[in-house]
Length: 250
Image 1: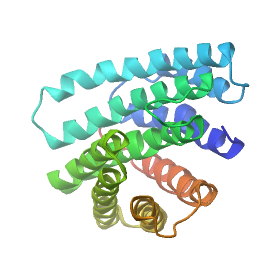
Image 2: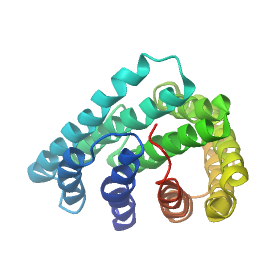
Image 3: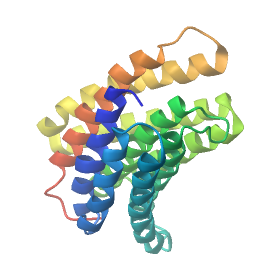
């Protein structure tokens, strides 16, 4: 795992998810114990100790997934978005276990698994949480549904192929743009930066997905990490979750 990806994932584990859990009415402290272990594992060489610490993080992720289950019983788009936010760190944790062991998973190399860990902290947890909150505040159930749908399609694309992943990226991009627009209309200035960053980073996500599916020129992984990854982590997820922290929990 490169240092930059490590910084991005550490931000997700120790800052973005704990802040977001307060908006989901879930106690953050049990998760933070596992998150501290998971963050430490990122900075150790691959091997038994790093895997053990990643396993502690996996337990913390299961703690969140447990809180997702009651929300799935309610046929409510906002609660579905909340459940998606709580469930996606488990995907990140499984990917982290394989990456810290240095093993491929489902045909994906440790390098790609490291990016999956980052993706499901931000495009998974943070994006679904923000979509649920903005959907509730704006009265738009479609906004609340688009991000969970796009995230699940991207996840399915890992098993099906590049074209399915492209479809998921298209849905997720459209959903995030819609959520960003609604958030700016509802909250104005506090979402000016987040919305601007989101508009650019999701164009990069589509360029990457189109390139992967068609073979057309597209940004390199290093460019995507430095632009799409950093922008979504700091410019969108961190700023958006911090801006929404005064709202009532989902």
